[in-house]
Length: 140
Image 1 (cartoon, rainbow, N blue to C red):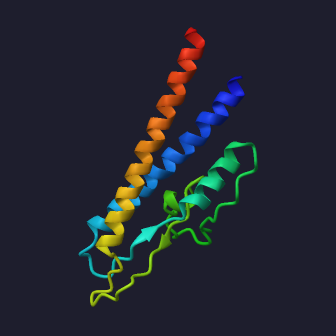
Image 2: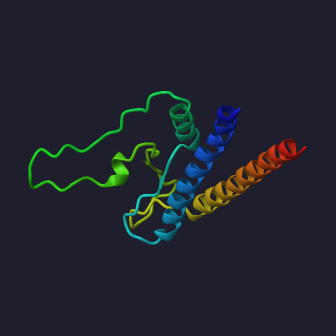
Image 3: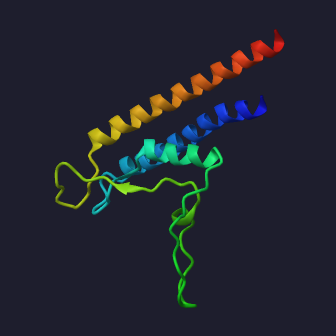
């Protein structure tokens, strides 16, 4: 019983974590809309969720790319690059070319931000409903 409960809530935990990371990426894009040469970043949510769910169901984790320190003078790599379970960030190509090299399209970013926030809230509501149903079943 506990395993099934953990499986059901584990999926939602992974989805909420990824939604939160995506919200941060989209907020960063919006915040840097006027920064010259800033490249908008995002990740494929469905692929990242499949990777996260596959990892939590007992499947081996996909190998992560690391930075090799071949010289003592090299600095340690950024932790976000090699962090296990992190989605791979991709650069979003701009529809219209900007003079300053910035690829942030505010209409796209705002729409993606609102959509992601709505889906985050829907996941929270679904989890809350599942927990209420479990409490009702336990209490009788």
